[in-house]
Length: 364
Image (cartoon, rainbow, N blue to C red; front, side, top):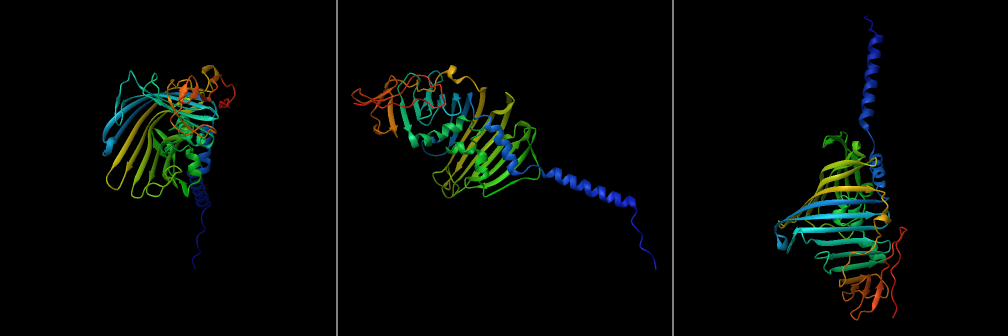
């Protein structure tokens, strides 16, 4: 009877070493979890919530095949945003080809958004010198209407992501944390020469694919969102049946500012399609020309509506004692009725604290 040969010690050692190498390789490839990645993304974004000034340039190309939007038009925007952790002010000059008119560069449209801690001002005019139209919201209306500008001003493609395109203010990580299904791909992918973690998620707002760049503060290097019928479009209702909306962020460039990696350039696309063949595409090239973190906001000027031209029509909501209509006019920092009686006065003194001074309602 032939005896079974015993394995040599060398073979046992080789087998154990191979197993250990395989285990080590598996552990190395496992990488961080979804929660850990979102936490790292949030850590970078939270550093931006204190105070900043951002100067930005945009080129927006819109293409459509129906209605008054039919054709291709390009507009240009230059904006400056101030944020102190509570109050926010964004002023924008716009020129180029719009839906029904063309605006020259030497006389651009003027658009401003202001949240002073109590009220939201949404102002637009044909130019800085012309009276325009002011929407003034207070209480719950103000909180609702300030969301889009807050999201956009805090980044758009920095923190707002696709929800900013919808008019929502929720940050991307908050949306992803409430996903119905979410995972990290096993392999990292290269985006703009950086190896990125790829997160895929199914949410009530659509299908998300997000590339996080660990070399640049775990910021979003690329993102794609697809919405189909039934997916929520903001919090107002679902995407129409049979229609699709694709939002993408790409070609993002980062810059180190005060030891924080910030995206300073990128391309943001929104493509809408309906079952009848109609489409609207919007392609925005965004470039931040200047970013200042934690500036002396009071030295730069108070958060006041001091850009509104006298004679501007005022549309008021949410302020007790003031009617909701277009009849009042703006006059020297006050809202007056058709007879010149002051119905609302805005303090024009600098507010040193994050909470602005409240509006004062004049009595008869």
